[in-house]
Image (cartoon, rainbow, N blue to C red; front, top):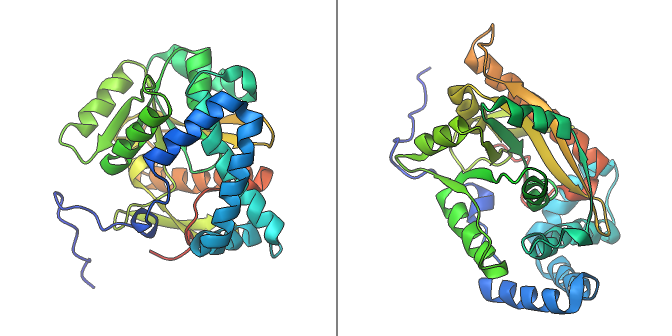
Length: 310
């Protein structure tokens, strides 16, 4: 049997389901919400978050279906309306809290960091490290903790369209806020990543979504097989750097718990070769996500059919 033809290297990848979904938010509404939140405070403005979540619960059927599918797997039972609302509200809360985190209002939050010794050791080595996250909890609380405790930004690697949207969102929340982003798809993307690692920087990747026809590996996840991209791990293997798992779980109220866990180390050759090392890392990555989903089940923010075979 002949191998399937590969996509041309310079051609754009076919977008995955999540990337084709229209965005319901707008920069104008984000600016309005930011203005309200900073003036009446977090407690008062959370009422607006509840109203917005109620709207999505009623008028976003695709998000409802995806939430129900995921919650059924992670809770081991059919979720009720309260579960769906709590799931969407957790997502809305992390988006709302970005307003305060980007404006350095750390005093509003109770943030517990687990595994910070792993991060200190990584920074002390000066070799640069990949931080592999997922759409699980809040990445912004991790960036905030990094600025607060180390003074070092986390360089994020993401697709160019996403990088542009992130920068627009940051500017809408706080014009002074900046994010060190490395957009994929450019001629110098890998050079930018290598340069940051050489400086001993932390390079973050959210590695749980495939963009479409990029290589992926189907591995066990919450009782079924799901496709995880191999690209982020192949990048780490190419650069020969260790990978640390990261997540910032929202625990309700003003509480967050950040986890840093060892994931993979590509600084030394794997006895069975790079391909086996990458596959092993992807499987461990899926297990770590599953563990934290069970710890905080309302923190999984992939509102599309994640288990669909792609």
